[in-house]
Image (cartoon, rainbow, N blue to C red):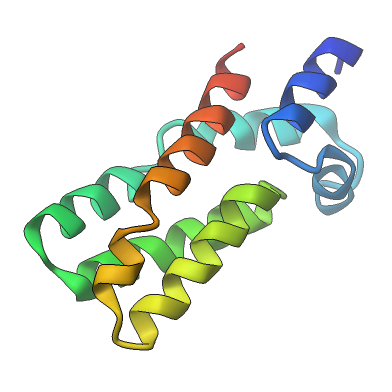
Length: 116
């Protein structure tokens, strides 16, 4: 991984050192899983569920995205997803939905960095 790539991923909120620890230092494997993240449909499912007013589906998508982003050490996104999951579980779907602008920003930063 080049220094530029490392910096882009770090700037997007990915703790590359932590992620590499999970992948036993295998940069190629980490890159493959980061690329797979681009195909993950949970963000779209979350947006649709919120739009449809389906709190149960939104909780499921949010929880799954929390896990995926956590496993890939996407610290900013994972932190936001953790808070959203807490809001859904506390019966505060409006509060959870209100987090979407910040979640969208963090998600888009990660996606852009992976694509670069």
